[in-house]
Length: 155
Image (cartoon, rainbow, N blue to C red):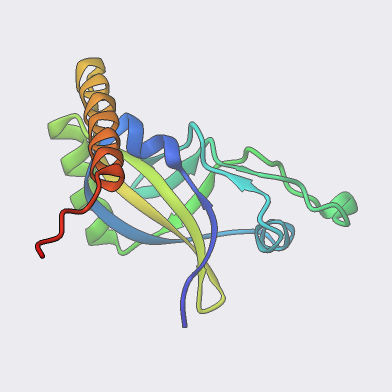
């Protein structure tokens, strides 16, 4: 059974070098789950942080459920992420000592449970972003040139 992807943080791969990936559950309210099933979520400008020994997802936007009336949730609220204590301690030590950050890469359903894929990442410098873009453009041009070249056949 494959994962049903809700949203992907495309900007994260452009802004950061992802070193490790971790899967975490998300503690959600009922109307949040219904909004996620409708695909109404956005991970842009969101990040994860350890506070009081617990991991939280901050800045993620899950739109209000249209039929939620007074039971609706705050779209930008902090959401608790579910990881084993030893994983949280290990991630916290890496974040604090090496200047890394936890960035959500994608949100998805796995066996009916909402999950978020976190990337332990280091921010890219501006020149490396430019270099990556330049390399991508050159690769695309090379592929196009190879595709357009007539095939030489030996007779």
